[in-house]
Image 1 (spheres, one colour):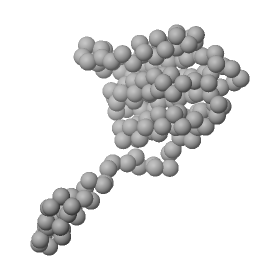
Image 2: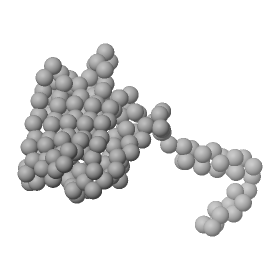
Image 3: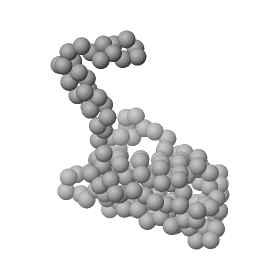
Length: 173
């Protein structure tokens, strides 16, 4: 067999090896439960939630999602990405640092009622793991979330109680 780039496979062994390489390239890890697909009325929200579902599933973390928003949600994709993406990444990262006997569950609520949008994300965390993370490389995720919420006139509250980390955001749309 001869390819466009001039590479030639002449023997059966080379062709078999090439097939194995192709099979290896096309097989990527997938979450065990592919049917867990977020179906919010927003493509941006779906993309962010489905990405988080995949990451959490691969890490052995349960992601509970409760979303009820208007298809005409008046928030830019950038704002949604900053808020949802950063808080979800932080929650999944924090869950990966809890002890094996702690249930690894991230609970997310995103609900709209008229012109009010309520967002809440809660996850277990290990204070020692979190403080070690702060000493090392530390991102600006929550700072960006807080700044974004402030810029659009919303409120944000962070609560750390009983090794449970909760972020609540209220936006006026």
